[in-house]
Image (cartoon, rainbow, N blue to C red; front, top):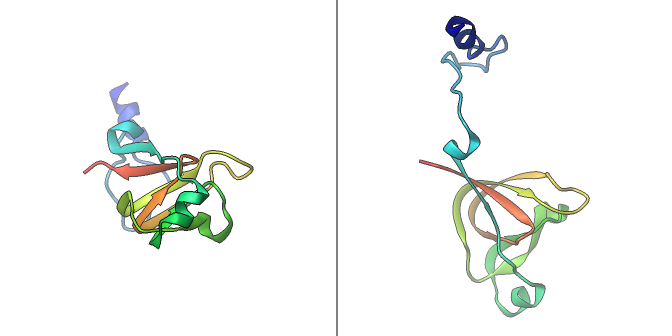
Amino acid sequence: MNYIRAKRLVPEIRFKNFTDDWIEGKVGDLFYLKRGKVILQNFIENNRGKFPVYSSQTENNGELGKINTYDFNGEFITWTTDGAHAGTIFYRNGKFSITDRCGIVEIKI
């Protein structure tokens, strides 16, 4: 039985240059999953800056506007949690904030 289970961790289709066994685990063991905070349009208008605010919209790469502060700095994956395009995923790199209509994936290191 252990042999069969171990064999399943080596898939038939391989990623180029990846020869190690797969690691089995839970998403929560590898990543932090979070939601953004409420950021209203009037807050954006009163706090204009250079840091993007991303929302659940998918136009303009999800950017709602730019403010003078940020909540996240680095490489992240965000996804839309509401609306017609819920589940749409974006790669983010840099300083930014997200609204409560977005989720964010942060790797645990």
